[in-house]
Image 1 (cartoon, one colour):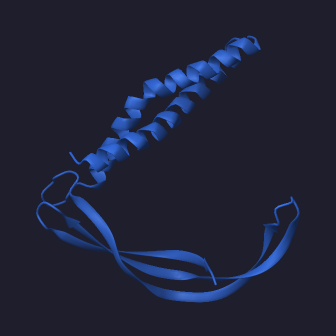
Image 2: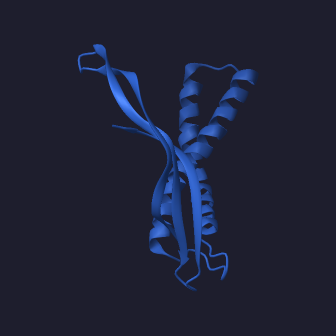
Image 3: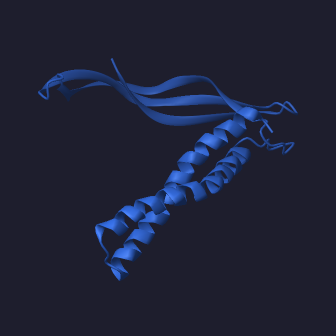
Length: 151
C-alpha cells in the first residue's frame, strides 16, 4: 500500500468521522428532545457524546476514505489498486465573453462599497490522461466545464 494514500486516508477519515458523528449526534439529540426534555446539563453531556461518537466513528471514516481512494485509483485493465493516476494535459476554450458585475467589497472597517469588476466567462474543454504505474495502460478523457475568471 502506498504510504501517501494511507496518510491521505487518515486525514480524510477525520473529516468523515466528524460528519458521521455529527449526523448520529443530531439524530440522538432530536430523539432526546422529542421524548425526554431534560436540563441544560444533559445538553452539555450531549456535546460530550458527540465527541465520543466522533472518536468511535473515526475508524469508519478511515475505512470509507481508504475504500473510496482504492476504487478511484484501481486500473481498469490490470485491476491493481493505487496504480491509476490522472493528469491534466491541456484545455481549449470553446466560447468566451467578458461581463462586468458590481461586487460588494469590505474596506476593513465594516464599511462596504461596490466596485465594478470585469470577468471572463465561457466554456472550456479540459483534456486528461490517466496512466497505470503497473501495466502502463493509458486512457484519455475530455470534460467540458464552465469557468469564470477575473480579467
